[in-house]
Length: 155
Image (cartoon, rainbow, N blue to C red; front, side, top):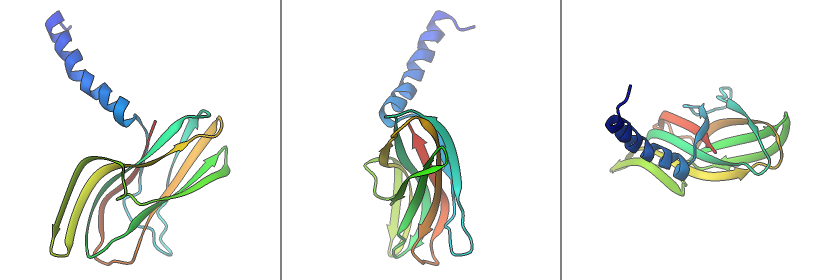
């Protein structure tokens, strides 16, 4: 059982965590794609959520990759409401308007880059059960190594 002093400390330590949810949103789903889809090898992950009209879903990327030269990557996302197609999106995970924990190292032509970033948001048009299906695609670059590529949905 917590005494009064320990309870105060516990509340103080928990406050920053709730502030993060307020500022960055609360994670409601994570699609751990973690590899590039290629012709003949599709890697599609999905998550289903019951959402209400005017809910705002933030689309975040949680990435860890390495490459030489250029390595354009994209998340392709299909949104279904009660099984019917609602929207199709394509996001560049490196184009983010909020970034958390970014570490990028570039030496000569070799890049290692990890980050979590907000790439955009989607306003839900109607009450329904929504399914988000996503895959990762990339330009042909044999040096591209994906350690982590996850699409994170926050509310």
